[in-house]
Length: 167
Image (cartoon, rainbow, N blue to C red; front, side):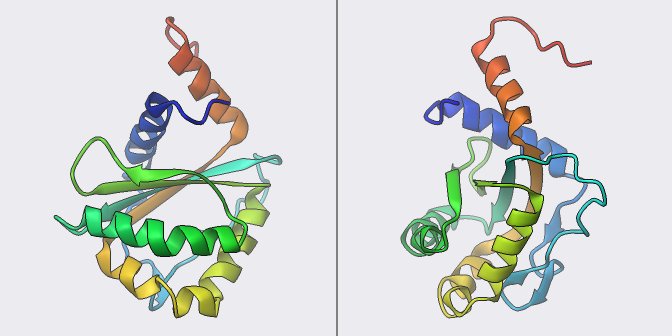
């Protein structure tokens, strides 16, 4: 999979924003403790993605503060996520408006993502680190988790001159 194609990430972000509008919630509504995003709705009983999964997080940053958010994310969150062995695929400002941001992460499977994120958000590293700065700049966030196989279809669609055969 090519990871340097800007069109690829733009399409992923657009896909995520469209698909997530129904589950978007304010950061305050989604917290179970200050600075700890509420964990997702219970995992599906029968996981449909046994292999690697991609989490696409979309964030609405407080108006006029996206550059500040990006700086905090790059200088504080990225090093911390790397310390915790998160696989950051891509992140950055969205192309569609001045206040949106995206983060794309890869996990071995759904359970790995849940466990990794649970441990991270419960950690002193997060709580005494960038949590307050990050959460203070976010108005809303939403996410989707898709199989790595789905992204192969997205990449094929980007590279192809023909329309998708998806029903």
